[in-house]
Length: 119
Image (cartoon, rainbow, N blue to C red; front, side, top):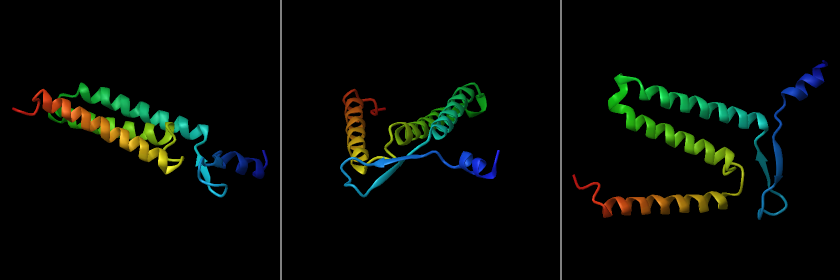
C-alpha cells in the first residue's frame, strides 16, 4: 500500500452538506460511520458502568447521583450525535431545548401536585 493510500485511509470520512435554511454559503459537517461506532462503544461502556455500580455496595449512598450523571452524559451524546444537533442548524437545537424545558416543567408540576417534595 502506498503512502498516499495510507494517508487517504486515515483521513476523516466526514460528509458535508449545506444546512437547511442557512443560505448557500454555509456547509455543515456530519460524522463519519467510524464516529457513530465510537459513540456507540462509549454508550455501551457507560451502560456497563451503570450496571456494575448497581452491584457495588461501597457506592450505595451515591448510586442515584451516579446513575443520574451517567444518564445525563448518555442523553447528551445521543442528542448531539445521533440526533445531529451538534452538526445541524442551531434552530433545531433551540426547538429541542424548548421542548425539553417544557417536559421538565410539566414533570415538576406533576410532582408538586402529588406533594412528592412535602416530606
